Length: 113
Length: 114
Image 1 (tube, chains in turn yellow, blue):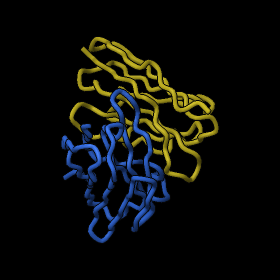
Image 2 (cartoon, rainbow over the protein chains, first blue to last red):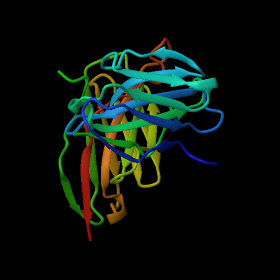
Image 3 (cartoon, rainbow over the protein chains, first blue to last red):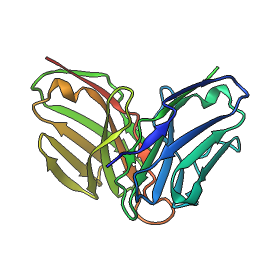
């Protein structure tokens, strides 16, 4: 069974540009989460989808971040326009309904220069 | 004050040693407690999870939760060089819109040298 897959693994963009990160969860997992780790800090929650619906987006830093989950399958996280402080590793995780056992992808390392 | 405190280390031990990793937390509403292992350039991998207080053992790994002290531990017996990684504690609530939302510690970097 395939795990959680994230694309790209690494992205370097200039300040002001737009970047879109993609996450393919484990098949059948209704819960999908985005997390972010900035350098020197802990991994922090960004938002939670249940199928295609946003359940909790309390961790989204500002309105430059837009997350979508089309048809309850894969998810994208768009940053527009990117700022220097957006640099970090973005993780996606998925889990089955009514469980906290989340499986993580390998992460996308975003560098904004 | 952070909700979850974890000493980032680094921690270096010889092969075969017993390793003790710890986290403290401030929110008594946390009910699920997890330990993740993360190798360099990889995503976190779930090692163990416990619900509420108590101990759980899986091979060389033992997780302990003391809710009265808001303190959780992970013990690794007979540590191996392959155990070298970053160990992250994580916690979550049960129910409501926050179900499954994990709050992480900063992670402890562990190196087991031959």
